Image (cartoon, rainbow, N blue to C red; front, side, top):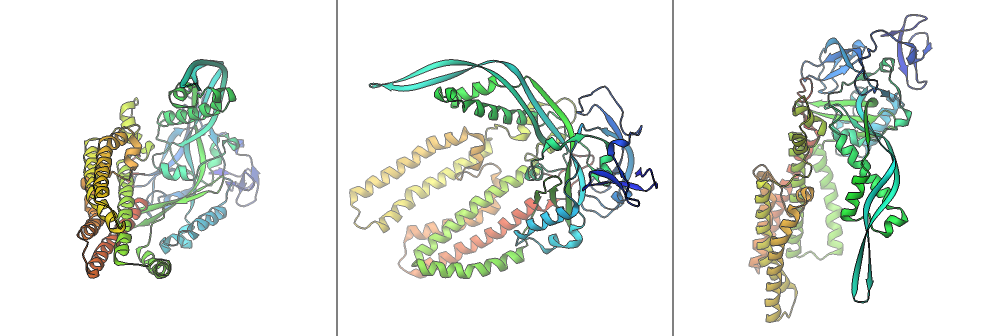
Length: 561
């Protein structure tokens, strides 16, 4: 603790006055006034990127292994990361000294107000998340971030351009090599340096205004807490550099001369970005303010965070199934009356609507399961993935695979894609002509034959070229509505339910029975699978928000996001 020079009381950082304030006599002290021998120790690296160290008290949770820096004994009452009410183990440790710190600008009252505004829109969230006793547990934690700077000294760069025009019956393309003088300076690209802090939550409360950063002094932590950094600076370096290259390329391409020679297109833009690659790269460790809350429910936990500088809030928001079902029942009645008012509902149309709902459930459920598997494997969090890869020199190929950057689909994904294509082909060839014949009165026999041939050729064309087109495009492959992606065995028990409803409806459409009761049976059967799928979707959503309790063990546990 830092002692008041007047009354020896405890000094804590006052957000409103941006000074250390005594709890008893209200004396104000500049945070830079304290220069204890234990505060920092030079170790030969003046860059501020981790070469200096300072001595702190580290509290470790005996249940999850999470660590927090504090000089306040109240830190030992509960864990911020797993929500456990337990006495934390403490030790004196030396940690990397940040170069920059942004002091808290938003008070705890501001934080609570921002969090409550966020929850007003979460009408299906559990009541426990809105409990005042829980909201009081928000902690001000300085989270470690890597702040990247890129520079390119003024110099000449060269890049290709082209100009295309038509002359008579010919289209002429002229190729040029353009040169210009360029100077680049980028600062303030921040990425969290703690595997404990989810990248999704970190991105949700971004950005921070680094212009308000101040030189770090340990006294700023007084009255707050800090997380230790365990993610190295190289982890996000490639992503940060890619962002500035894209931005620099777009800015230069806006030049009228560059627009004239189409440098913003295709390979020309890639070569322009390579020419703009920075000559100097720098990473500094910074401590940025975050209000942090954990809500524990049995063996699961979810987090709420508020940007301590801007007040931007984000949270894991699970869905209370009972509240969701009650709300759905209330909405179903006016929705049904609205449809009945403007649409003549026939058994065939009703069955078609349920099929569309089932297909929508398949797409949503498949997307959620992709996110779940990415998170639980660590692919969705680069910082966490890097800690799992081990220490030592970076294995760039392993990191690239862990991040999923430009990864081609594996054999499992190819197999599942082909399976979905076969299903689409079957329904395209057999179901569409039947539906068109039913609603196109007076269709001639020749028209029917041409229709069958056209649909068959379109499906074959799609299977031949569409599959290859998506296969070549990494991330688009995963997001395509025509493919399940990988992990078919894990997804099938969930997706088979709405698929069964679609198959049931397809059979009824193909048979085209005279009696309406068969259609109504199909509607009830398909709608049953839709309701079943909706319950699965809610459980998947909660699986994404109510995380497994972290097992950090000095970072790198099984917390997936």
